[in-house]
Length: 184
Ligand code: PNS
Image 1 (tube, rainbow, N blue to C red):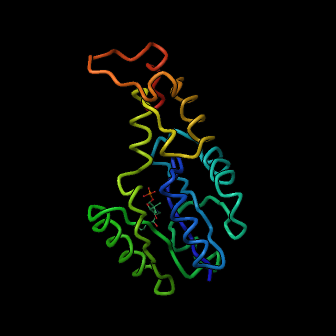
Image 2: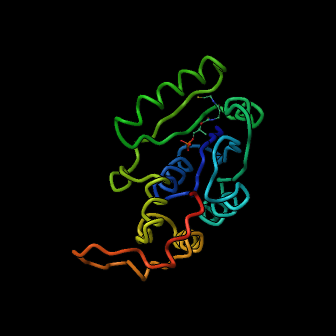
Image 3: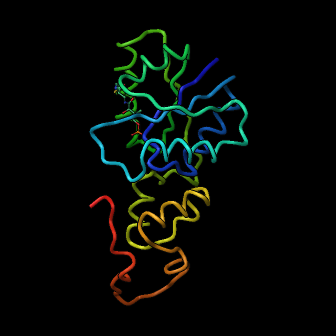
């Protein structure tokens, strides 16, 4: 059985990796599919994200990485996949994910959505959280694979050592090197 794991992955986090690893044990093949979304301005280009995910999943032989545009179910049908794999972090995810699953079901009855509950330690984690922390100079070393943390620090012209493990009670202005914001 082939599963598509669709998403933005801007960037891939340890929470995504958790779902991919567990999905790779359930399905014969998992295709991590990055949506080419013209409506979003990403931190990383699709090509960068594809490479990041390839490096992150290289230890998983039945996981491949691809990009797509248009409807996810159409991509799934082209790939002859039967399943859309999605992670559920909290109740807040449930409403949107259920709506998406129902919508997809109206588009193709052949494709089932399978949800995996995200492991507890990643229940708060999202790509947006990672970007928010890095943007303000915090360390994301514990949230994303090491090579991705480096990519993120480079993007924000930042270094984890500046803030990592720093405990301070005073209000500080971010160092000048942190003022670059690609998303601004
Ligand atoms: O990582 P994300 O941003 O939560 O992923 C959302 C994604 C890409 C799975 C969803 O937006 C999607 O499937 N988009 C493609 C368009 C589509 O198929 N729309 C119909 C389902 S709502």
